Amino acid sequence: MQNIKEIQIENFQSHKSSSLELAAGLNIITGPSDTGKSAIIRALRWVLYNEPLGDDFIRVGAQRCRVALLFENGYRLIRERKHNNKENNYLLIDPQGNKEVYTGFGTKVPEQVKELHQMPKVVLDDDTTTTLNLDYQLAGPFLLSDTGSAKAKAVGQLTGVHVVDAAIKEVARDLSRTKGQRKQELSEIQKIDERLEAYQDLPQLKQQINSKEELLVKLKDCSSQLEEYNSLQQKLKELRSEEEKLEELLSSLVDLDKLEAIYQELINKQSKLTKLKSLQRDWQQTKQGLEDLEKLLIKLKDLAQVEEHCQRLVELADFKESLTDLKQRLLSVEAAQEKNKQILERSKDLKRVEKLLTENFPQSKAEYKQLQSCYEQLRQLEEKMQNNQKLLQKLPEPKQGEELIAKLTEQQQKLVQLSNLQEKYQRNQNSLEQGRQWIEEVEAEIRAKLAEYKEKLRELNKCPVCFSSIKESTLESIIANYSWGGLEDE
Image (cartoon, rainbow, N blue to C red; front, side, top):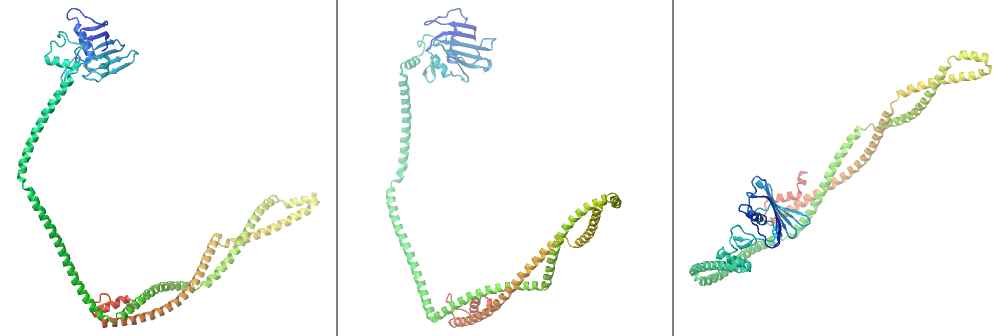
């Protein structure tokens, strides 16, 4: 327990602002009635135990109250409250001045506050508590005015006997609960024994059931053996019947080796016929392609004339190239002519200049005659250039000539390809003719073999697959299947 050195009370019941310093040991507070002595005890209980609850103890006319305790260890504990729960907290200040605020504690006291003042309430029973450090006004001496049970509880708490009392109570509750469970279980056992009396003959019934189960297992074994025996007997009958049929068939199939040889030969011929039909389809496709090529050759019968035109166009192309060169040269000459025209324009008064030169500069006459000769040559070149320009205008444009040459080159390549195709066509025609003759020979041989095979089957009157009797219509169907419809269609 921490001793209290100072109490400060503000606006708590009759105290507006009071401060009490307590000395070590016994302190006595005296005064007339209704001067606030009991209010000091209530203020201490409010700080230490959060009692009373609510805000009725706030001084009339004030909005808040405050009680502060200073302990001998230097810690200060402050409790503050305002009307209508606007503020309700504990403030704990250590000797260094550090503060901790506690709110939202409800009807309890924060554990840090309890650890600080070390004056907790003593629990006497589940619903009974008391305080050893504070008491209310007019309360009797400690424990003397309490009941005997309260005294016993308090003494037990002080001496530790309350633990033994709690253990005795717990054991008594366990004994009572155990007695009730035992009584209920004995009642259930009695009911079960009464119900079991109806099953006294269960061992005898179990023996009877076991013996019947053994008989049932033996019956199932016998039944399965009987079914297996009947199945084997039925299979034996079927095998004997098949054996008789096979013996009859073997006696009738004396010439089976010959039939097998004919059958194998027919399979080989049939394979050859399939290959020949594939060759025939290829031949028909090639023939159709050759017919298309023949039609194309008819359309291109004037190919020799096309070659002549092509040669002519090649010559024209060469001539055009030379003319293009001349055109370039003509353009350069035109440029020079333009310069000469400018010179002639500036020398239009050449007669007058000649006279002046003859009179005044006899030595320049020879130079003038030379210039006059150059002028005559220039005029002749202009006439030639005009003629060449007209000739160039009559020729086609360069782009058109190139397109025409490209078309002729393409036609010439197609002509070479057609010539090669015509040679291949001729070779294929020869090969197809030889193949057609060989197909006719093979078909004739297959017809002869089929006729021979048909006669053999008619003599035996047996199906070559299932060895059953066959009719004439079935025989015809067998022969038709071997021929695949190819020989009859042709």
